[in-house]
Image (cartoon, rainbow, N blue to C red; front, side):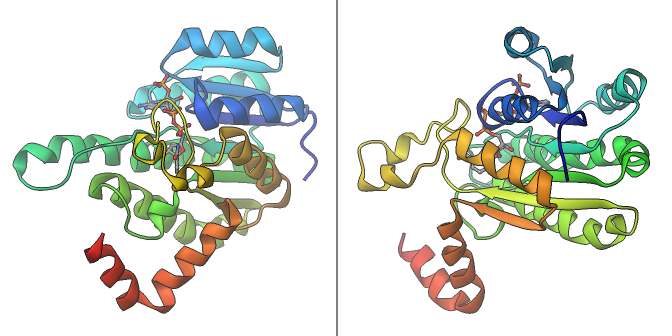
Length: 250
Ligand SMILES: NC(=O)c1ccc[n+]([C@@H]2O[C@H](COP(=O)([O-])OP(=O)(O)OC[C@H]3O[C@@H](n4cnc5c(N)ncnc54)[C@H](OP(=O)(O)O)[C@@H]3O)[C@@H](O)[C@H]2O)c1
């Protein structure tokens, strides 16, 4: 799909992968509605590129997501690419009732936030077809790694994408996943890897933004960033007992 002149909505555009994606898609000639809660960050992006249009929205707030969709329809009359990138990194284990609130909040932002955006923008995406929904999942949505609330939200997002794709494709909307591995950003500082040999496998936000731009053009179902992390996913599925044994040792 040619991107120039078309319209994208990017959530979580105020930092990290979302900010890099908004910049990239704008450089590709798209009008980008950049959504997040921190308006001043969005204004900085817009000041650097007039094709970026800031919109303040919390994806956990149904009214705010409805307003985002209405604003996009009223201002541009189309949405060709929706990038569901807004996400939080929940740090707690699930050990007792005190951990449930954080788990629920994580699901609400990372999973329901994407579902809300898909639902509210569905009509506009269909009317703009060919179009894409790009859900930013995670390798942690394919293999168990890290905290259970975060992993559950990303497994859920992968499932949402895979279930929605066949039906949405009939209307010309390709629902795609981009699953990053470790990326150093504000919300995911990767402190545990600092100073270790594993630091070399950390990707950049721009690596992921580049993959998102490629998927926006191609509509491919799934892309892992960096690509070689797919080997880990394959190992998990073809040799699950080996994976579980390794997980229990770690
Ligand atoms: N970094 C990694 O290692 C990694 C790996 C795999 C997947 N991912 C995924 O990549 C996505 C982007 O993360 P990142 O690494 O770029 O982290 P980041 O720099 O912390 O960015 C997160 C973005 O999400 C936004 N956000 C958070 N809660 C929101 C809400 N309720 N409503 C609207 N926007 C919200 C934040 O903006 P405001 O605070 O301004 O709202 C921010 O722009 C996330 O979905 C994350 O799970 C990251």
